[in-house]
Image (cartoon, rainbow, N blue to C red; front, side):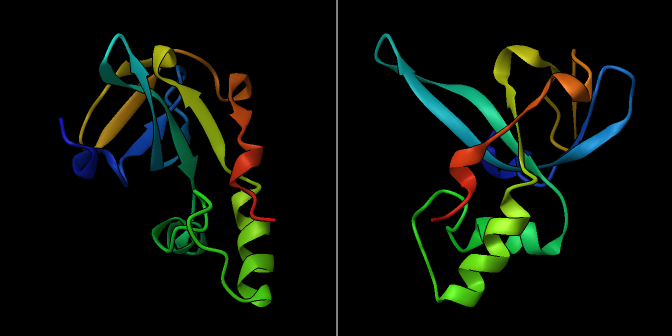
Length: 111
């Protein structure tokens, strides 16, 4: 599966409740190969725009109004570890944990 197929996929928890959409992916290098460490989840048009512009990964900062809006939107983002994903699908990703087990991803909030 390609990352481009995964981005925008709906994510549901173990009970089938919608958690959000895949907005980004965290990669780690293990034994010389790259593997998915986890997924960054978000919701809404502003969240999508913030990630698309690079604000979510810290690649861009933008003018202060944009940073302020992005900080509020990105603060609601969640991180799910790759180990907690039970089904990797292009349109739907299913988790083996409840939504309450997911953690926020504070590094997404631009300074």
